[in-house]
Image 1 (tube, helix red, strand yellow):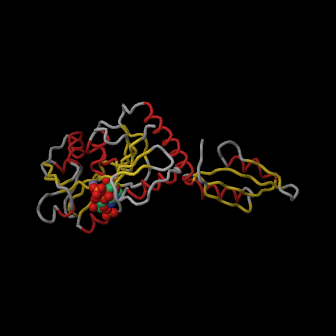
Image 2 (cartoon, protein in one colour):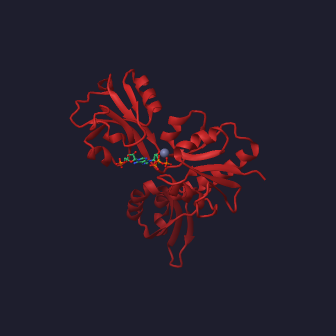
Length: 285
Ligand code: PRT
Ligand code: ZN
């Protein structure tokens, strides 16, 4: 039986969320990741625990078949791989920042500057697209201190909350990439492994759909059902079950997490009572 080799970050900002997603897909595996490799117990997947920077290269070189990595690292390392799924975690952005006192007027202000970054490829593509020429100074860590020690006049680095930039006296002036964790594969992945990947994707989609929706139950007088049905888009129309109390029903449906508070308010106005909201474990559309 063939197995799919999945590269995940050994330890760092992607590791816990990557392994949690796999667990939510019902895949169990040894919890101790002291080793480089581990096979799952109940799904034909083998994990390779690697540094995130090595993941795109290992997938491209067929050491692994698929991998979970930040889009920022993927685009910096290679364009040979296919993004099969955006995973929605480890969100951040790659941005250009300049010292607070710099009089920034737009990308043209970057002309001729020395910019420190660990992302020379993405930065140089961005500058080229904008028709700006600048010197790119590649450094592997602590990019944010480069201006204060006189190594560069601007930086291009990963930003999440922005507090690292602020505490180093820098201001974010251009977002050049919005990043999140992505599942990547070699485009030419062969038959049986592609099938395992499809099974994995089916599970990931069910987990993601479940996480972004809630199951909702409510009671309403029968005359309010048409209006409430309009408010509950659901997978089809809501399930309507008569209550023991005459003239009343219980309605069951699914609402999107994002629309949730607005929908609840509208439901109450339409006459809904006893609203219960329940997390969904898996959802297959
Ligand atoms: O050891 P290994 O090479 O595997 O890991 P690593 O240290 O290179 O990467 P790691 O674990 O730090 O990050 C892995 C991935 O998480 C990155 O490639 C991004 O896709 C994503 N990610 C999400 C982040 C951040 N948020 C983040 N805030 N990566 C780095 N940062 C750093 C950033 O470099 C900067 O120093 O956090 C600082 C900025 O944070 P704020 O909140 O102050 O803006
Ligand atoms: Zn790394």
